[in-house]
Image (tube, rainbow, N blue to C red):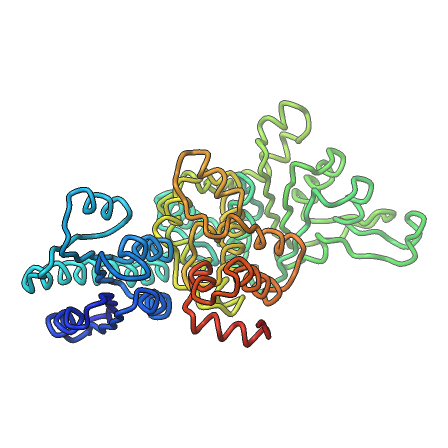
Length: 464
């Protein structure tokens, strides 16, 4: 079954609209028409068509003005301009402003059908590509990770091979690349999967408490030790202990950890009796361990004990082919989390994300798309929905981006002040109505939503 396609025709001559509607009528194509350009824009905002047929000369708004607003709303919409007053200069201006084609009146029906059929074919190819992306996303999941790049395939294969056999492992890689997910995958696929997965963030533990945190203590071992306490290594008995950011572990504790790994036993602080444990240990760090060894900040013998299995998580910049899959996965995740209908990213938003260096890796991408889903009022995320820092870096690089919200940084202020989604949305609506002097059509265009949707939200928030 062919995917349904919507077409909006705007022309102040009813006879032309009737001719176009009859000529293009076919299965899988729904045609909407308007003789008033403002009503036509409302139709576009409401129906979100794939194709727009647009007369160049109309009262109230010219075709080029409508074209600019359509491109601002969604640059992926294909716009065909029609005019009986053809000039080369106008045609070039229309194409530069984002029109897909330019036809002379009286319209040649075969030519019109040919142009629309080509656009329909392109749209259906894009739809098929999106379907394939969804299928690819399902086949690219591995224990909570997403990837189809050679680097990720290699990582997944190594995890599968290592998981049944390892006793200790070291995971290295830049911050934000998912080292914790690799650790959980190793645990889940290991014989210890029925045991606990216990995490210790080494960078968050006070140095003087490290030993008691890992190995526990007995009553009276120090001031305040009113009762025996089990350490994390003992608590993880039969399962896995994940030592995150092990590069921040003090040298004195490293020596005791090495002995515990070698002997598979722990001695609580204040006790002389060792306790046998059966625990797998996975360590992770974003620091260069060899440099730490040279600087005498990490024990070389502990490194060799842990690095019998060493896995490295790649930076996002090294696996850019995974970016579209990660974007889709995260947008689906946040759309469900925020109860929003988010269909995807505009082309220009995709370009901005593709050009970014991603120094914060997956964690940064998650932050950016979470922010964008939170800020978006329409069902498509555009450049202005992205964080201000990303838009600023894109403008610095010389890229053009939409700026319909840039005059009002309400989104960033709302996010920084911790207000709710409803309060943020109400603020944007009120601001748009104020800037448009109460003109609902103009406010709807500013927000890239239909007039009906604006009115619904005004009633929802009791705005007048």
